[in-house]
Length: 592
Image (tube, rainbow, N blue to C red; front, side):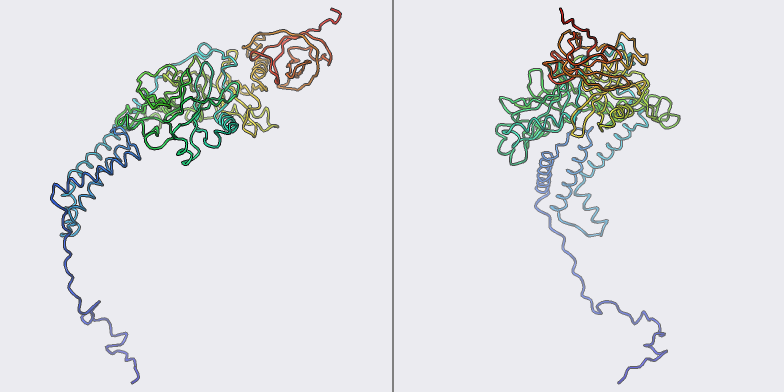
């Protein structure tokens, strides 16, 4: 029988929807059986013991792996505590059975009943975090933050003596790392098993500025095969002579950041000092060459979490693992306060010494440090240098600070001038045809003039030349292939510009010496507008630098002339290859 639509009938589209005739789903649903509650495991006492044991095991594993400081001033302590509470609650719910009668409300009531103590502990931790953050809030404690770094005004010319050549660090961290890697590559018995730890520390060692670092294992397999004897050596880079030395140890270093398990330095520290907070450990050597890890103790001095400062250090013997906390570190320790901490504390002072609101509105006398810093050796200590500029920086400095990294003694020198990157650009423009790149500058006293000193590096990352730039007049720039030549040129430029007297042009370091000989070769170049004559004597590979502006007779020199000349040495001997400044000469009478 054919099917037909009947408009208006009960089956038609227009018939509408009758809810009384609609039955959704199965017309004969089966009644659901109520889920049986999961039975609890044992007695209440046994369940509690089980929960505590599981939580304890988790806590020990987490502590071994993550090494949180058990100190309420450390943020990781609260993460650790929260995780312990969470693990206990999960165990308590599991061992007590899942009671779900009463829906969500009933389930929440059940969980709260099983986890009353952890729940209260979490509330206490949250309250402590809130109060700690509030008590450390810079808006409320701006005055305290501004006093973290005591600062004294200084007189640069009077307090910063002219440094001798053998104290000027000529290498930056990158160049030192390249030299160290190259030196290790020369040692076939080490290069296949070890690598160089990239974190070099600048220290004063036996009166010389050097960078030192430890070795590390090449990989996990090489650690396994070499761990019995430890790391056999460390690297010293002389920042003046640019020489790298691998110092072999009679007994290897067994406690380093490259170790694993119990001999790992971080784990070794945490197990011996579970409540202390530490800055990143740095590698140093004492005056006898014994390797140590200097682990500065971090303290929070404002509220619970604010005012990061240093209070002493734990010194760990890298060979034996012996450790001792010193609130006053020995004098051979050069790096107790990291540059980052000093910079942060000065920025707090610069921003907030006139109050928090002034740092946002008005910004009267608001200052910050410039981007970048460097180190220099003064009085057998290492000082960190960085410039200071206004918060609305206009590519100029209002002064700079020198801060002792062992004592945090900090002085501000109010000398307006070019900021460091402008000085670097000015130095690079002098050798733009060679595409040399300037390192971040040091601050030196040259003839009473605050002066930037920087190395100029080639594409291979090695130092090719040196440059000096006057801080207050950064268009006063001089370069040289040696430090002595660079300084000599710089002093002459200062004299020509009327910044120093003509009598101050001679180099500050080294003694004038006199010799005689026969001229074998003469070359010339124009530097800073002056013609320089580079004269090689017979039986010599080095060159004398006669500046025609200071020694006019140099233009008359010819090959085979016999002369008596006066020069100034940078080191103890005339360099086999190199250039030394010559300040005078006279012709020798052949008849005599």
